[in-house]
Length: 526
Ligand code: GLU
Image (cartoon, rainbow, N blue to C red; front, side, top):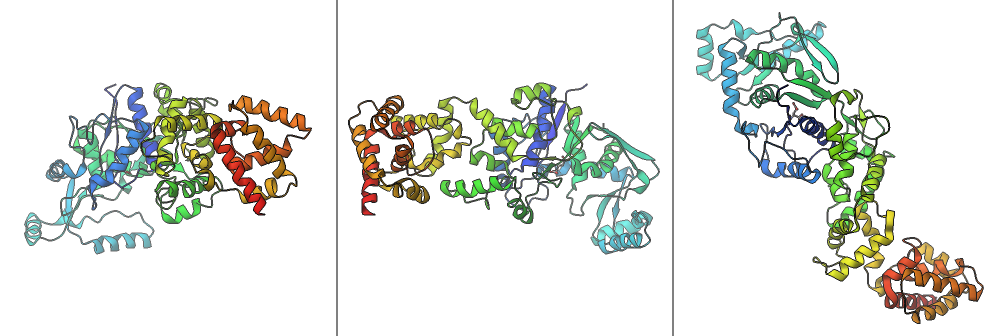
């Protein structure tokens, strides 16, 4: 086989869709699996907005995941330009060739006429085919129309008598269409702008793309595209139409439309990702789930997923190695990726699975790496200075260590505000304050007494504090429960968190004493 060349052709939309990312990943994997090339080509012919700005998030998503492209924006390559808006001459030349060979025609019928033809066909319950009136024009008439500047579109002249057009799709198998049933598609507007079906074929052919791996919704375009390759005398690439990424727990294509997003917020599996956004993003100046939602790749980066986890998750949407291997590094997937293991049916994005991958890949990270990932959250939330000094970094490291597997996403570090606020600004969980501090009768004297034990303690390590408290409750002949909850509430304001002794050790003696004193004062105030 010649060198495998795949491509991904996004429109610059200002964000990277997670489903599109999965399509891109499969293209990338197939190219890498074969030691071939992966091309990024920008479908910007219809672009009104600033392309560079709208493309940035897309390139960023590739960079974040570590999916490099061999040719495309910023890189160039032998088959450029890689922006369709810069390839107009190529499309025009190809159109001229088809026109000259009688394989395309200028259709001067106004859109209303074509629409009326279509409606008539519908009414008579027959398949619509273009009436091709413009083919009956004489050369003189055609020249006159053109001289008058009469509007037209260029249509491909579908070879209606060619029998069947077919592909052997890597995923869908043999698919065929009857050429006699295919309307003549517009391939270029009167203003010289090419349409998707045509530009794609010209580009894929010029760029020597060997495999077109794309979303299954494009299967309907494939008949015309294959006919266009043939008309242009180009090799037809191989196709793989992959199932779309469905919304969690559904068979519906994941969409970024507002109406759908409203639905997703109430989807039991999806909801938690939206809730996370609404809790985390406002703290780090990123708006809320209104601005960044889990349909976008950026969401996962900003909420604190590891690229490894997202890649693992995306690889497994509609593809598996076998029925047991779950955790796969990108290298491992590259080695094992084959199109014959892609399923035909829609495959859902699974937030729980993604979180499970995240937990696994988080477990593979060193403490230093976790610190590096967590620091920016604390900085953005204003909990630590923009350039944290060494003691701050160490403190964060100790907190992360104490959190253990409670730290699932890097943004989880924001749940532990109590370690970053001044002692007199720590807030208390109200319900737990009532239950653990206000209600139990003798809690204040016990707390005051144990405060003195802490004050006299020189070794503030978790182990030493553990022994200190155990010996003290034994001596006092009281149950551990009488003091430990109160102590946690008094020092952290929260009913749960890392191990109690880790909390005390983390805060250190002075802060623990200050917090206990403040709590005792509050209790006295009544
Ligand atoms: N720009 C097209 C899309 O995003 C590309 C389709 C294709 O891969 O042919 O749907």
